[in-house]
Image 1 (cartoon, rainbow, N blue to C red):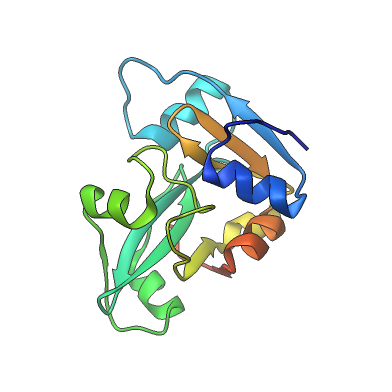
Image 2: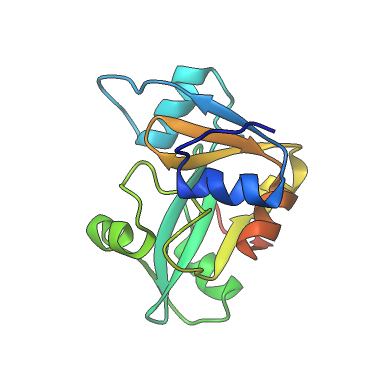
Length: 161
């Protein structure tokens, strides 16, 4: 388990819980095609199916967190179904920053300003470890999907395409 003084809130959550994780620090490309998560995949040479992006949406007007592979997209209809709602919509980036306390491209499912209902794409259950943001644009963590789900009280559902 990595320890880091002055860590982000996401790392503080992992450290307090005693969860095994790998801290990954890197620099993004000057030009990003496809967003931060896909760029992280390219820069690190990690399969984009193992890098998961954290997105904020609303289901029937209530904010929720969706964690999906960088290689795909969030299916809003599937998210609404998983959350027991009728419709889902993406949250504007500025509002996502306000809800989580993180900047766009560095939003982590861990250590957000308040605990929001969270869903992780079911494809993560097949992987030993997934990579998610550690709460900063140039920092990620590799963690087991089960540990991530436990710390965020997330549920697994087929929400990605």
